[in-house]
Amino acid sequence: MKKKILLAVVGLAILPVTAQASLQLKLDFGGSNTYTVADGASGDLVIVTGVDSTSYSFGGWLVDIVTGSNIGGSATSPSLSLTSFNLSFAGPGTGFSATPLKIYLTDTGYASTAHGKFDLGFGGTQLSGATITSKYFYDTANNAFAETYQIGTTETFTSTSYSSNQLDAGPGGVISGPYSLTMETNITNTPNGYFTTQFTSTLAAGSLSAVPVPAAVWLFGTGLMGLLYSGKRKQQLIA
Image (cartoon, rainbow, N blue to C red; front, side, top):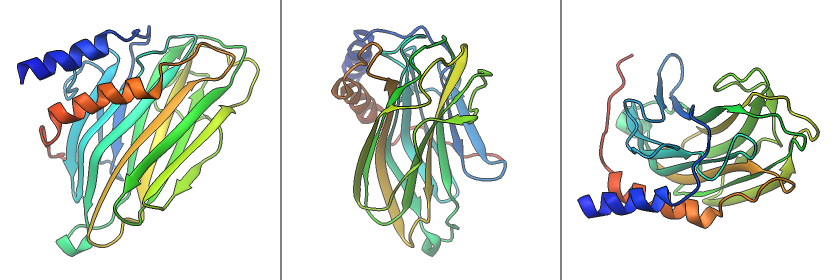
């Protein structure tokens, strides 16, 4: 196991590390039932700066692993990735109500850009018919998790396999810094019985900016983390 952990850390360490230092994940189960983990803080399962990963359960939801990263980006050329592994819901037949789940990744402190365009990508699989939506936002007040201005359009998926790309999305022109970026994934209308999904959401600077790290590289790193940490750290929220 020690060799596997070292391999995962080394594999991520060879990637260019962003100047951003305020990466945060948030799981919102509705009402006041939220769980937030900052990069490097309590609850973060990965010691690498720029990778924020956690595992959590609440009610009928089990978030086996969810990981956010800003590795490969910088203050002037953003790159964010949000990936879930084996996210599941035990349906009403097990006594749990079908409450929605929202997963957020946010980062702050991005510098002014004259381009104002971003490439967005979303894809995944699910066993049965939930509704999954992806959204992306920026905020020129530089607040974490702020959803002041939407980038691109909201996309909704209900099929067992789904993917989409929006290239050069956003307002164009100057975005005054410092500004924040937030990615949101919603899972609603979960069917009766058991539901399982995996997804990856990405946001990167548009085509006139630096080329982001290829998705295959990111998936290699997060795949290693999924193998290392899957099934561990099941925590219970105290409301």
